[in-house]
Image (tube, rainbow, N blue to C red; front, top):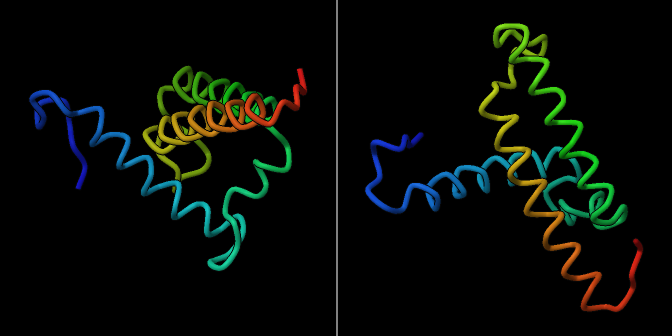
Length: 107
């Protein structure tokens, strides 16, 4: 079910994040298979790489908007791109925290 701001009184953020998580699980399977760590590609590269991916997705989104919302990849809507950006930002935060707690400063 897709929620809008009008559907929620005070907890719309949680519902939107839940939708992002559902997309992450679906896409994660495609990246690494059902039995694998579906974040292994991101863990391997670190939070800086993930932050770069956020910027790439943001740039793609801006281009799609400039083209009137018409993108060549027909099965990925603008909303999916926004969810990807949200998920990548969360991954970056978590990877940065892990790196900071491990004491391995990559910056």
